[in-house]
Length: 235
Image (cartoon, one colour):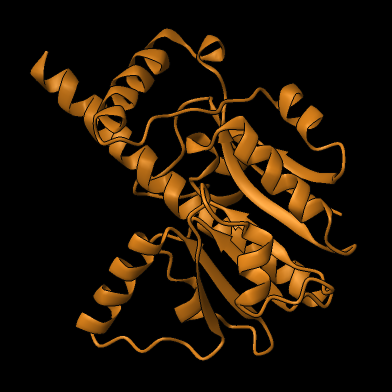
């Protein structure tokens, strides 16, 4: 039993690492395509400790990191402590979403609302309320043609296999104790209804993402489970 538990833990750890790597790679690949079409603004919503701004290969791309003020202060303290300079093309936009307007704070932070912009929400949708998710999509949909959004999302419990549901329940209890409960789930059909103002280019599941990013690997790094999906949609 202990050996089986250890094996499941290792599979879960590999799957989680694969998902974190995949969603950043997918976002950055999709962003590169948008930059080639002329997009010059990239907004990371719930940026956390994302490092893209420090690796930004696009000379004309401005990056805006949006996060809660306390989280953003913590990140900037870590960067300073590790002597990592803040990139010139990065703008920090602290936003308390319960008290402040995302559009107003982004504009005050230098975002050009008249220019196409790509938004990314990586590991974020799961924690949003439906109201906050809708408000974010409505704002992005108000921006010029060529704007888009990239995010991952998770299926509801009833679409999961029993072992996946049990693992989800365990993780949900852990994050609930940390004060960050899971809130928002969608099937692909439900998500399509949320995005009627957009042209959905891709909505990819595990098999498609593994085929794209994890084939012919010797380290067993790959996505596991059926609930997580990756999506990009455009105006």
